[in-house]
Length: 399
Ligand code: NAP
Ligand code: MG
Image 1: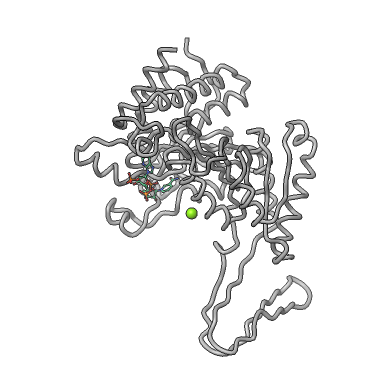
Image 2 (image 1 turned 60 degrees about the horizontal axis):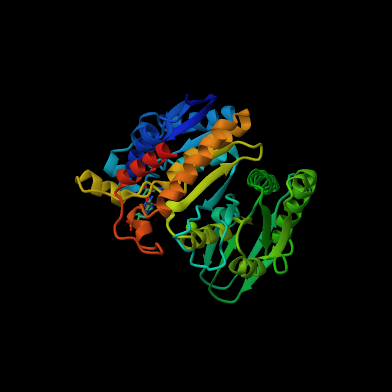
C-alpha cells in the first residue's frame, strides 16, 4: 500500500534539463512509492509566455492556500532567451515573483556526503544560509559625480519639515549611493529565519557591521532581536539559541565551525556567502533551497538553474550526466513538510528514506560526473542522468 497524502502540494514544473529530470524523479522515485495530491502549474517558459505570466502568480497564490510547494528550476529570460523562445517580453524571474507574493526568505542548505569532502575540513554539518532578499544595494539609487558638487540626503516626512544630511562636499569627481530597507521587510526576514530554524532545529547566527553603521545596521540588529524576543518561548522549547555577532567575527567563526547552524545574512552578505557555501560544500547539484514566509508557508527547490549547457547536449542526442540530487531533495523536503503539517508520519518517513537512499547510493560509488570529479575515494566512472535515478530507484526497492 502506498502512503497517501490527501492535502495538495503545489507542483511547479520548469525548463530545460531540470524539466527532464523532474519528470524522471516523479515517474521513478515519487509516484511508485507515495500517493500525492498535486496541484500542477506549468512554469515552463512557453506557458508563462502564453499566460502573460499569470500562471506564476496563480502558483504563488496556491502556495499561500495550501502551505507547501515544490518548484523545478525555470528560465529567467534575458534578451537572448526572448529570441530563442520567441517570447512576448523578458518576463520577470518567477522566483522573484513568488518571493514577493509570499514575502518569503530563501534558505540554502547543502547535502553532506561521506565521500564528498567539503573544502573546509571542519564543516561536518550543513551551513544553512538565509538571505534577506529585499533592499540595500539591490534597490539603491546611485549617481556618478563628475565635478565639484555637494550631495545630501533629504528626508521629506508626510507632515513636518524636511531633514537634510550632508553626505559629502565633493571637491572633484566621485560617486554617491542612496539605499534603504523597510522595518516590515526586516521583521518578515527575522520571522522567516526563526520559522526555518525552529523547523530545522538549528541555532541562528545573525551579524552586521553595526560598529560602523550605527543606525542602518543597528536597525537590523534591533529589529531582529525584537523578533527573537517575541518567539523566546518557542526558541527555548526547541533547544536552539540565537547569537548576534559582528560580521567579520561571523565570517571568522564560520570558517572554524563544524556547521549545523542557520546563518541569517543581510542581502549582500547572503548573495556573496551563499556562493561561497555552494562551492565549499561541493557541487551546485547538492544545494537545496527553500522559501519560507513569515506566516510559515514553504516552497522547496534546487538552488541551481536549468543546466542549459547539459540540455543542449541532450537536444543533440548526446548523453548527459546531470546531478538530480538537489531536485530530489526538493521533493522530499515538500513531502516531509506536508506530512508534518498533516500529521502523516508515513510521508515523513518515506521522505527521509528516499534521502538516505540517495546518500547511500552516492556513498556506494554511483554518482554523476560533477561529483565524480571531487569524490574521495575516487570512483572509476560516472553515471548518466537517468542511470543515477534508476540506481536510486533500485536501491529504494532493495530495502
Ligand atoms: P545553472 O543551470 O545553475 O548551471 C550552471 C552550471 O553549473 C552548469 O552548466 C553545470 O556546469 C553546473 N551545474 C548546475 N547544476 C548542475 C547539476 N544539477 N548537475 C551538474 N552540473 C550542474 O546556471 P545557468 O546555466 O547559468 O542558467 C541556466 C538557466 O537557469 C538560466 O536561464 C537562468 O535564468 C536559470 N536559473 C534558474 C534558477 C531557478 O529557477 N531557481 C536559478 C538559477 C538560474 P558544467 O556546464 O560545467 O557541467
Ligand atoms: Mg551570488
